[in-house]
Length: 272
Image 1 (spheres, rainbow, N blue to C red):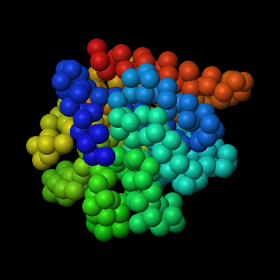
Image 2 (tube, one colour):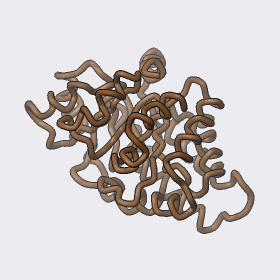
Image 3 (cartoon, rainbow, N blue to C red):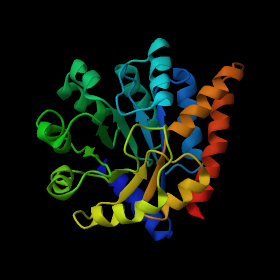
């Protein structure tokens, strides 16, 4: 599991480029279309995928991802179905890292130990749990690491000094640099500040550093990726899914195709 993430970054480094990660919400716009979207991401250059676990109160996320969670929940998506989707993804894509991203409440309701076991069984590689700080490592981070899952930490522009060291201490897979002070999808990242932030993080860890939040265009993806080891695009993809869903209610796979085309432009930019 951890090996898939390490191999992803090594392959990109060997090719002299950064990695592209894409976030989508499980079950948006539907469970079946989500499966197609995941396939399109892999086929069009996403190096790893972040699969959002729908939650009714995603506090770190802006309007686009909040709406995606609500659409998925209204469509009947659950954590159990998200784990099943992850398992189907792994059966189709043996080598692409898959990271579950979300909040602790659904995990707690599922039972943390069962969640870890189910995630491992599904072939998940890592977890990003936004609302569990290092002080709560015993809740999920420690047992997840023991089970072989990478626990990926978020670092913000205000994570400084000893706090930076504390947050990163048990991080695995890569470090996720949040390029804006705020929620996702509400403003653009300051590209000029990313290089200094990545350098600051790399002083205290040997893990790759990936930048996300506030990156919406291929050009922004290219510039942000060049400052570190990779970039994650989320809200821009989610917004495109919402826009396509309002007009493309026809055959299965049409929305996924649009997402695949956008992913290809992101991949080309990151590799340029």
